[in-house]
Image (cartoon, rainbow, N blue to C red; front, side, top):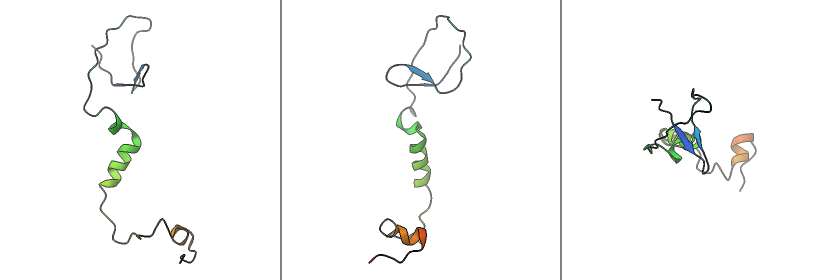
Length: 79
């Protein structure tokens, strides 16, 4: 028996890794939902989770969005 992980794109099952299966042979597929399946497996979701685990930096400016030109390019702060 071969076990493979896949995801469903709404039309077909897509293997998450390359598979070595015989071509043009009938297969029996059993579907079992995994706890980690879905949104949590997406790369940006994993990245956001990792970033949220980083400690807070007390030196991070609180006006970074409004004053991004100052912090990125050294321009004077806007009033």
